[in-house]
Image (tube, rainbow, N blue to C red; front, side):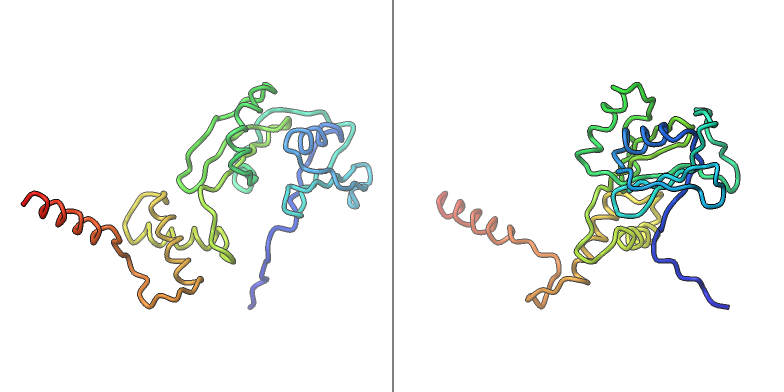
Length: 209
């Protein structure tokens, strides 16, 4: 047996209501450009809308003008989607609650998730949506996933409950040392202040005597 190796999310498709509701939410609320549409090739009576969530991949929605929006919460059953999360910048995240509030969209407010900050709300069809903002930027050529994997290992070594700032900071330090060269032979922790402090104390002692 052999694996079927994935290389990223290609697209995610939702069952929508009418066409305009989907456009108004995905583009009009979340700012995702509406890039093309065509018939649902499996169900000709439906339309298939495509949106760019910001990374060039795709969010797609099947729509039908005979379906009306139903804000009832989506079922949280085995095999069902619990929520979908989209990455946002720190600047956008700090504005999210105010901008949702001004539209009258109920939301959780800011939620601290340890390695990221989140805010949750529902779309017009009851889908739970998360806007997530990482608390860190990985070193060049290192993914967020690599940082989190190392932070998890550090958390387990220390028997801590969840990943926090300390684990992320230590993971970043190790990854920089691993991936970015230095002219220094010894890249260990140093104290550049101890010598200066000692010299100042010596001068003060000499002045008093």
